[in-house]
View 1 (cartoon, rainbow, N blue to C red):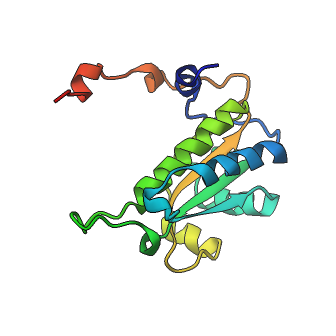
View 2 (cartoon, rainbow, N blue to C red):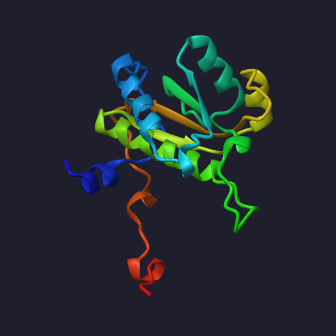
Amino acid sequence: MDFLELAGSRYSCRRYSDKPVEREKSDKILAAAGIAPTAHNYQPFRLYVLRSPEALAKIRGITKMTFDAPLVFIVCTVAEEGWVNEFTPDFNAAELDSGIVISHMMLEAKNEGVESICACWFDNAKVKEAFSIPDGQFPVALVSFGYPTEETRPAKLHTIRRDMGEVVKEL
């Protein structure tokens, strides 16, 4: 499968089977995170892997946004490690870098036949407290991975895209 086909076939999965994601595949997902480019290669992110029944029960008690996936990563930014552009000191690249890491993970998961969803709608403070995430780290996303149920399909809006003429301007 070429890259555009792979990227286009990836969708936000909201129904997972209870089949666990094999360690070999989750290791490849982590490897994709590790090679993701970040500003100045500062790597201002931390990943927390939730796979045990206890950890999954804990996150499911905080939010439904994991959709009962068998594997969930808490993605945190570390702002003090983020690159700051001297021309725009109000912009810290840590969140952008975390987004790049998440994209790499989700695309590698798809490459391995594993679906995913990235969710940002959860109580960050509760997640931080429940998992003893240290000060200086901020949970920005929950990325869930697993195998879809047979009836799972992409959402209706998945294939709706703006015309490139609306979003691209060549100068």
